[in-house]
Image (cartoon, rainbow, N blue to C red; front, top):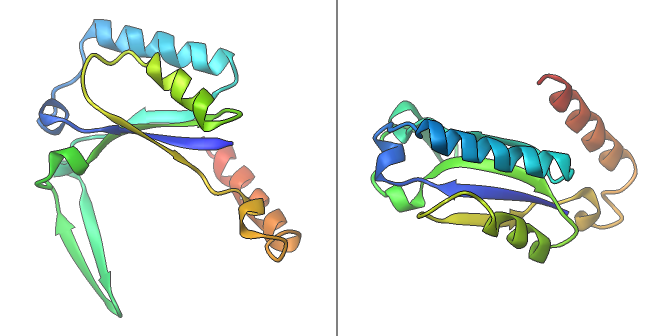
Length: 138
């Protein structure tokens, strides 16, 4: 099972305050541990929402909204893509994340088989080929 772990933003991350050397070292060690265990597939921190934009869709119309965005608690400051056997295992890993405050959200990623047998076969193969192509760009 794959899970997207969303690290929620806070006033410091939205102000562009960078982590300390110690915090970066702790996070690096945690990421190394997850990588060695075959759990971590990807992960990164995100710039403040002031450097981003949103697109709102309404029928054929699109509205561009430039950051920053007001509701800090609803924003994402970083992410991990992890692979574990269960949500319980994902939670156990994330309980070890080197945070002293804040919040994360763990969400399971849809897999091809979640869409039923009609999605299997050609569509599933096309999905896998696309995933391999995008992964190889890193």
